[in-house]
Length: 267
Length: 108
Image 1: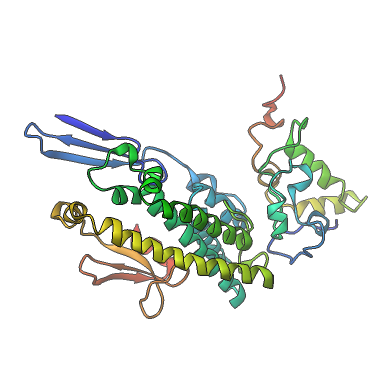
Image 2: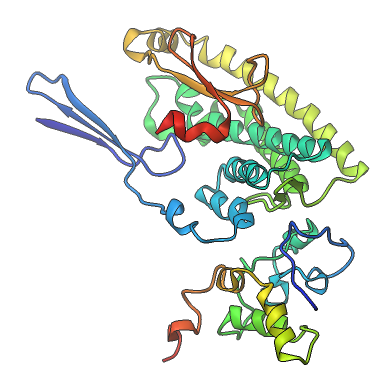
């Protein structure tokens, strides 16, 4: 039996490993995805101060600490039975949206996207951010600028660029000055332009590549799966708040529940 | 200080030292370099940049700074004030317990 190992997986942040076993005919007999590391957060958070959770759990990741910071903050609201005032909610949404832009920029241009931009036949050595910059140089500079702006907003609202500190049960530890608000608005406008540019890159470079489109529309490339996300009262996606909704591969609702009922549905 | 507060228990004056307002801020015992990011956001320093040069035990330095601002001569009252500090190990040794004097890790 032949064995193919992909270790580490470089298209996502964190540690992962894929093992594929082929039978004598060269067909896939078995495939495994493994996460070969123990973090221990569930255990060492026990007994710690509850208000420290946003700053401890976010150490899970240096790329997406903001998501863990917010998840902990929202759990704290629930533990303390408090609802943040409108200003704090807006600050948190602003913070999370800035993170969303910065993180997706990282994902598309640095982790998952280079394979698509460079094409299915490209040498693995160029399937990275440097290859992307060489192929679409006018975008490279914008990528770096966009990530910088995203993180500047994250620091202004969350206190720090990486591993923010501002979330407290019931709100945020500080507000914004009018000057900062204006600066954020300016940056947000140019980030919208950057988003449009990124869609153009997908249209012009990825979808214009017939080889790639044939590959991704191929049956073996299609993964029918359930989807889970937060939705508002109209079942529209919401990144910060709402209910958890799971839909099946046909898009039919499978489950919908408040975050605090997570254990009843998932375990 | 007559009492110490957890960060969600009071709204600090952003112009004043957090420790002076009863919030356990590790700024006094931590190497600078970050630009005091957390205190500028009204949150206490947790000491992530580590001890100053020449300091063997960051938590002990932080503890001694805190001890020196307890405002009482009455042992019973002092105990009460110290009692308002929750999770002292996690607070004073957030990042430095493994290399601290506790359990004699550093004594050669």
